[in-house]
Length: 450
Image 1 (cartoon, one colour):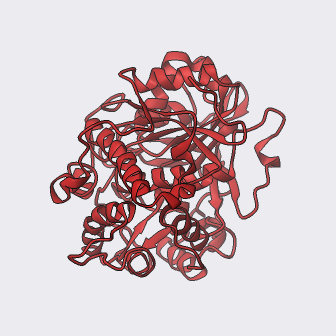
Image 2: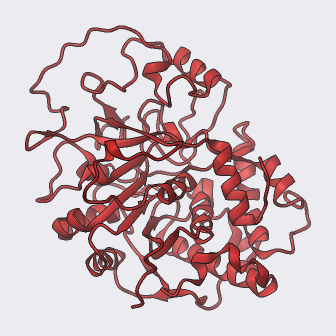
């Protein structure tokens, strides 16, 4: 196996493609800061085999694009790495409980039925640029952590956390001592859920200007496998060597939802043929437009004309937050335009109405939603200020004094060997426009301000 580029951030991409997963993969491939060691394909948006095929379609499309437009090779530096990215299948279902997917939103193939509507994108042979293996994705990831320098790899998880939980089950000491950073998109802390009223998936549908959320289910992350999420992030991890939460960054719906790709902007800046019977001559653009057409139809049903960039924010975050060095505490880490806060919560696994709910301990968490506040008023004020008055936290938008009696023996207090186990969450990014400019320039070669 070829050695990785020391100037790049090596990542393991745990994904369930999926519409926004594929755009996130395109961003990773077009980001010179990153080197994709492996793509672990999981269940989630659709079944494992369809997700696996979507990765191959993406690589095939890039190769076709570069055959026609060789000058665009500079746009996809990670596509030409000396180290071939390993593509492998991970988990087919959760640790416990029934299998949940979102095929009705993403289509049965994960990309809005692209295999039927656009058969020209179907893969007839394995594209170059990937290393193929029948080895389990869990074993592949563990082997990569073992072969590389300790704390040099970033693990980016944008689907269910089942693969990472199985890695911890198999060798928690290896994972906890050698992973450099874990970046995860999942959960809903101070906002309502979008899989159920309290649990998260990757798309929230704004029905009213006050950001009232629907409970429809386009995709699941924590909801798909709450047992995996709780084992990794909860107050009582079942591992001999718990996951080091000082190296874990969570991107919940609270922070990812405002980052969107408006379809009118996409049509104006990327593909003027979008939504018409004509097709762009550029394979990458034609590919993205073919599945975004279906996505737009679904979002329009909920009076929204944009796609939320949940998984794309995770890749963006990986660029700014490299593997965590040994001699630095996360509170000392300063990244311009980004802010983090430590949150204390547990995850509901078996509730009839609350599966996958992130239950924030508001007695112990100073950043939590203020007890007694009117949530509708808080959400309205957050929308008006666009979080400018204090980050993406409801508690600072409309504080309400409340006296809370704390039981120091409560199960909800996160302690492990006397230390608090809290999860570091991204609470502020450089902003939706900054992400849009990066995405448009890198993936589609569109320059200029949004």
